[in-house]
Image: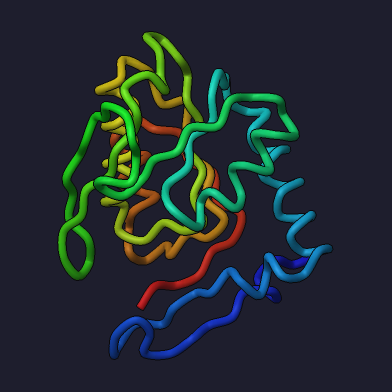
Amino acid sequence: MDLKDYIRSIQDYPKKGILFRDITTLVKNEKAFKECIDQIVERAKKFKIDKIAAIESRGFVFASAVSYLIDKPFILLRKKNKLPAETHSVDFELEYGTATIEVHKDSIEKNDSVLIIDDLIATGGTAEAAAKLVEISKGSVSGFIFVINLFDLGGSDKLVKSGYKVENLIEFPGH
């Protein structure tokens, strides 16, 4: 099954000039979603994993299923002020602004090896911030798995150059 066939492309969303890669068409198809999760689980076998973390919010869809299937704790990396207990925070640049993500201080313990899963990587700013959150928490990033890599935006390459292991299921050019 070619998962690319289940990704909808929407021109000029969320702003003019962007070609948005929509994963909702993949997750609404039970066979495509199952195949996607199975592929992530297979790639996860390449990593030492104590915990799985995901970036809000579309990453939660994939990481929670993988966490369940491989029997590992699931850690939420959320937007600012969405977690109720004490947090670590990292500010980062987006293609069109700035943002902050946080993790509960008690989510990741010293020396935990954390696999980070998200739906898409573009320029890599959010993924780098997620890695910083894990490292601030005294854990280590075992690697990243993305459903979609917008390869010409360079985020995946940036992570690899920073020493992280990266797996992608689907490749698309970015716009």
